Image 1 (cartoon, rainbow, N blue to C red):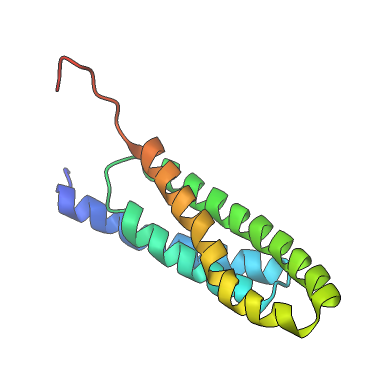
Image 2: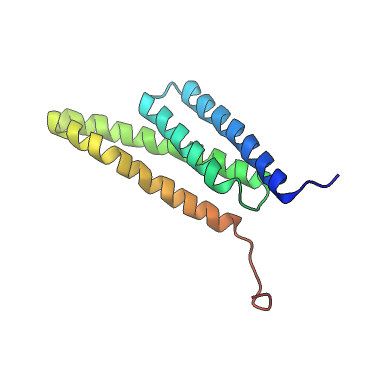
Amino acid sequence: MKMERGVFRTYHLVFGIFAGIMASFTLSFFFHTNIELTFMLLIFNILYILLTFPLDGALMKKLCMLLLGNVICLIWNSLFLMFAVATAEYFAGFFDVLYIILNPFLNLIWVVSFWSISLTIFAVPRRESEA
């Protein structure tokens, strides 16, 4: 039984969505995280699954990169939260406004970087004779 290419990609996408949802909620509830981290995990998983799972490549490699992205999200946001709490104690009210403005942009930095690295990992190397 041979699956068509479009059906195979759809299976990857559906499986990835369920895996991303499970990873998001597992990480967020296991570590009792703040609401910002939970939303960031959901946004990252949705974007990552919709943009990379339809691409060619092994499903296991995609799932491992998704899990690695979730761990990086957890570490990044935990460190940033610790930095924000320490800075808020020092600067008081001014930093709250700065935090609200900068938090999405700083999260965007790691999401775009991780996504581009993932695309490099998924790329199939070609020889010069094939080009």
